Image (cartoon, rainbow, N blue to C red; front, side):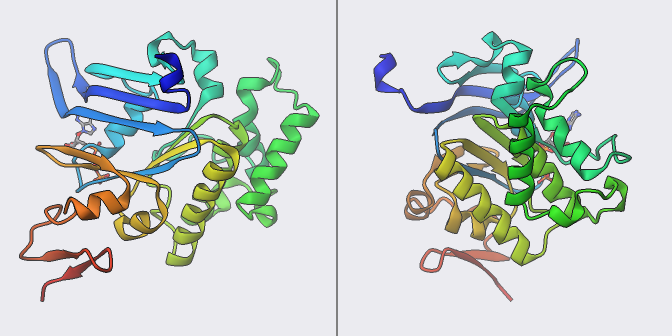
Length: 264
Ligand SMILES: Nc1ncnc2c1ncn2[C@@H]1O[C@H](COP(=O)(O)OP(=O)(O)OP(=O)(O)O)[C@@H](O)[C@H]1O
């Protein structure tokens, strides 16, 4: 049984996500099922408020699941220690960072925290991983700037560099391209794809850039209120899964071009 799934990095079965208080549980999405292999890049798409960020936070162990199974490298998420998770999953969320007074280099160095000693001394390996992340995100000229001096798009690239410096098997990113112009959106998603393919990491991100995701992702998860559909972009197009994502009197999906058309 072990040998039949050696390369699955992340397996999600019957997952229900939402918010729990002592009195009640509020379900945001239920029956989510999918698996991601090592070396794959995948996008979670769906309309506003459907639960994309909630799912990402649940997978990143930032908030608890309501039920179901999340398995990372064949081991249930809850069986990984906090220390293990920090070296296996990096999470880039949309919340503003508390540490904007740090320089860019200091912030990226925090990505190495799971590996450094208690005073945070960086080894040669740590420094090399940080330099590589800076180089990959092309942010050399920002290294000494304070984070509060950055534009939203620059900060977004710095946060991705921090996640890369963390050097984890799974990288989760919540809307990593929101503040970027079209060129940088494409550049970041192409970079994420090449990192996944070159380094065998698994990268999962939420996005509203459905058309770019169709062109660049290996897999996509479409969250909808009554169902969750998962597959390669080609499979999803063939299954007509994108066609009912938005009200058809306003927007229709053209399966020939893989793009949305506004109905005037
Ligand atoms: N802390 C919270 N407590 C209770 N409900 C919440 C909380 N945060 C978000 N929600 C609700 O969960 C639902 C899903 O929100 P979520 O942010 O995951 O959606 P999303 O698909 O990422 O949306 P968007 O595309 O607008 O970013 C929404 O109805 C939202 O109101």
